[in-house]
Length: 303
Image (tube, rainbow, N blue to C red; front, side, top):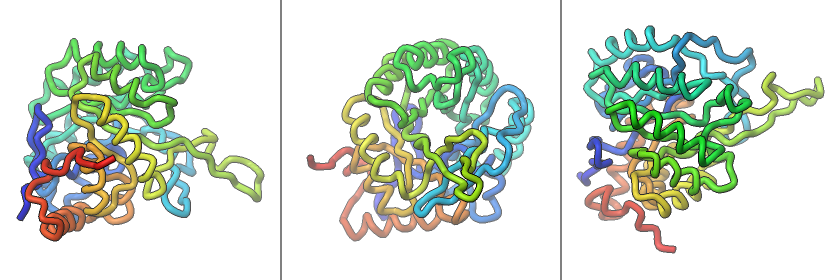
């Protein structure tokens, strides 16, 4: 069997499969479908300091090759999540990543510090696609200076490695990634969902109260691949690819484009046991293509 191990520099994962935030609950919801220990790591649903109910229904809308979601980052708050994490770690040794959100830079920091002191948490993922109320609802990831300021604030005050999750809804994602790297980010994860619109033709209005929603699934894979290649060619820190990944072939394509690891998203909601299948497909494809190690093909796309 080929070597699926992934060395990110600050942590080594047994394989590159990491279920993405918002698509895997808090891990325990999937423990009935497979052993969580097969995963490289997994990311918990995004968390704010206080409990959030999220957006009003409808929250999910199917498209021909994906879904639009307007969940609104519902969550139990930091105190309750700490209890959940302690419960989950009794079932698995797989690294747990907390997805940190905030409505202000100060809240981002407070949430990050809350989990930085937990031994049960391996890494932090800074979700700078969250709107910031001090910036008029704009996402930090849409501005180089805000990205730098926020990432530096977090890195100056926490000890755990920080992955910075970027938004694709910008004109120059590489400049944002470089700002995050300059501020001290340990890795970049991309991409978050693309903004889309669903229309209720009968009632002549948007499907979602928030008008726009986040598009994910197979539809965004080619777009995500391009951005992963672009960013991994620009930064010197690891890139974790996200976007429409649903097979072992998809994973190897992202690795070839420059990703060090990947996050699976929408497929987890369609096929809860997808991680087992994808890992087995990677193993089989590596045999067929005579790839000895995942690291042998990383970033080897010939342009």
